[in-house]
Image (cartoon, rainbow, N blue to C red; front, top):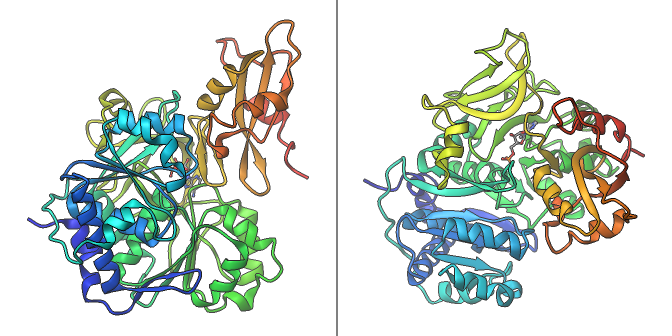
Length: 502
Ligand code: AMP
């Protein structure tokens, strides 16, 4: 039968002497060596008791070893479950309880504090740091350098990626081998990736963008990645001359534009800049072209579907749009009753081999968002212009995207409402020059209480990942509500629109 994702992405590495990963400090890893690292990680997972179908949860620093654990999980036929490194112990408790992984890998520095919780979930705890240390690395070091992968069918699970839940509960999006492989194939062809490409990889690998879009496409086409722990301006400036492609969130591009050393000469040799995960302002697109001569290629996707649309490689990359549906992906815009008229705004739905299998152990949620005939209700609002370009106009669910990370207001509101003296709260995203959007809280005090907004925010520090914590808060007498009692967030956004703008 075989193992579709492993066969396409990782098996060919065994025959490659060329470099596949280049690290910031200059270390280079060749294909055959990385293949051996994957085999060692697979043996280590086996030694932890991981069987096909088991979940392998990781909350670790970005490193070649962490990437090898992803590949090893696929090869073993298990299910990779990466978690944002910013999640707190309280948040992790939910994910581990929900996903019930066989093994949980974390940083040696956090292991002691998490041990009891991990044990309570009957998972095995091992550690992996960002520089090849930790108990799991030690297990890898002693293991054989070849491994026979497990058989998997195209529809079998390869990964679960958690999205934030609108009701405060995250949902695990179940992604199959075929979901991931079909999308990687389409993107590689559309964006004309070859084995000569060198991808500057500064994205996190716990999210679909860095893990699947960037890494899978690069492995599929046999290129090289310059694999950075994160976006560090100096490093990116120093390494861009060695790259041919860069993938980023809009924040990467606005930061580069703030730097005068980022100019036409530095990137004249580059083939492609890709942006996604959050809206790229048309003005950023234009400023980037004026500075460098390159037109950023914007695409649109999400955890549940991988990528859905992309601007063309050869044709016009239109600012403020996310381009056309990918080959094999259908897209429609739905109103209250059926599809809207051309050009009108409605809910974006997509269907295709990229669309996930459903939410892990949440059949009702799956049924709410995934129609029986395969159409997925994305929750995004958009329109298709006269030339077929898709525009995203808003998020039906009031999602805030700060620095490329999703924040669902309801989760932050629930945490705020628990703080002493808080009666209720509304969380919105406001335009922010650096983060795209910043989380902002509007608080109402309990009767007779004088609320200190700063103290309320301080109370969230242990509770929520940093990217979810509001960057500012105000205290008001009452929240604006409509006749149905719903808080009018649009009104709040208008009122505080300029808060973070110079
Ligand atoms: P995630 O599941 O974290 O990848 O977030 C997916 C959401 O990010 C989508 O549903 C969109 O709301 C948003 N998104 C992704 N790419 C874009 C884009 N190019 N423009 C606007 N919004 C985007």
